[in-house]
Figure 1: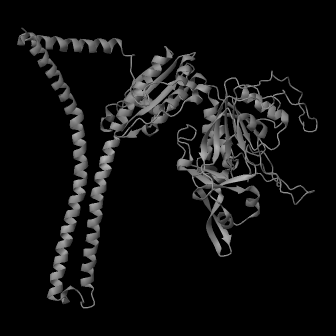
Figure 2 (figure 1 turned 180 degrees about the vertical axis):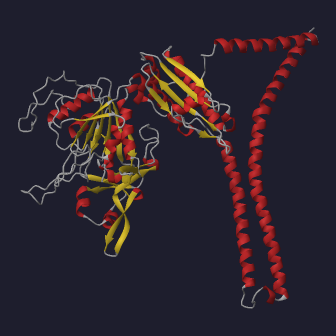
Figure 3 (figure 1 turned 60 degrees about the vertical axis):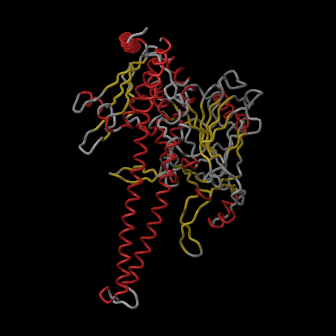
Length: 630
């Protein structure tokens, strides 16, 4: 027979064992974790693990996290814990090559001075001037620094990408090289008739801030491995040997960013004096390579989207007017792919007379749209844009019979060569190079690990007038962007310039997940109260109108001249007005109170009810066992 003393002793032993197990587990099993989140937010992707596994030298990470100060800001506090846990996963996967310091910068401390020195952003917490820090700094053995000034909870889907990119850049600190082949003066240097040298386009100047940009000859025979990323803009009738060089560069694992156009508005060629009536060529394509890469591009079609059309000033027969110009589009909202790191945080990108891309039939590559038109889109003939000068006429003739036309896309996956017979034979007529012939590497028939190429069906996206205004400030020209065109260029080159593991990373899903059922209940409750509120508001407006009518009626000249019946009626209206206002305030108060009560009940259920049920279950099990023993 089990006595009460034995039962109490058993419970005491169970509590002691529970505490011991937790102490031992906390000291020995800290690296053992189980990620049960739906999107596996705390589990590193294979790409991150591969990059960590290839680290040759140690990298140090300093995570500045004001845990105490953020007690008043739960969003930052919870996100900081998530970042800390994820960084620990990085340490575990790096096998000693990654060192982590979690630093809490106290106000007016050396740690705070250090955080400010690294450029970590100060986050205001309250009106008294108290600030906190939520940033990351990485350093390598050569004292290179790479900070993330603010780990923004709103960008939680890109957290792993940002951390892995920081580590990768510290492991490979050399500035990456971008080779440029272009038939547009994007790098500047061209001279006008007055002898003035044209500056580089602002988008390319922004690119130069992050990369080593070098110009390649349009008849280059070999693109060597010193070029990390190839930028091709408006390639018009490139020599076959250049096409072959691009083909082999991509098949060897080189990354390419290609801008083609059915109507490059920044291309202004001189008319052929022998055929002055023939329209100069302003389109461009890489058709032989596109075919091998599994993408189709029409050089005679321009996309239109009335809902995204830019409004321009136009002098019509009725005088100056602001009208929609259907070939110029501002792509925003769901026209931007927010699941790809290149475009995930862009707000708007402007394009001018852009074309569209499609996956070719039987393509082995995957085409992922980055920029698209909207659901009510259509196509315009290229010649009609040049001939028809009236934006209103273009809009009236436009037919929205297409949907989601792809303007920019990422191509990845297996692909073959566009030159299955090997290097093309030399063409003395087309070859204007004065350099000596170079030995070509062994030709590749297929991509070793698949290709990684981004194609954009517009070149005007890079032109200054489509995204930036240059303003003078202290004697200098300062760019003032009104669209994210240059950000798109830099993001694309940055993403492509990394290795395939870094490119493979995608958004990991949302960290903050709302209670959908609760939100639904709140919306339903709000709807009911809002309906009642609207009814009362209408009743109040009707009462006030009646009162106003009595004061300003044809038979009255002010309230002093009202008849007794009118005074009585006005008094009733005033009482009704006061009652309605009181009821309206009650409704508004009830809305807030009911939502607050809903939150309170949820807290009670989560904090009190579940543990209480578990306790009752344990007590019941104990009583059942005691009765069986009797």
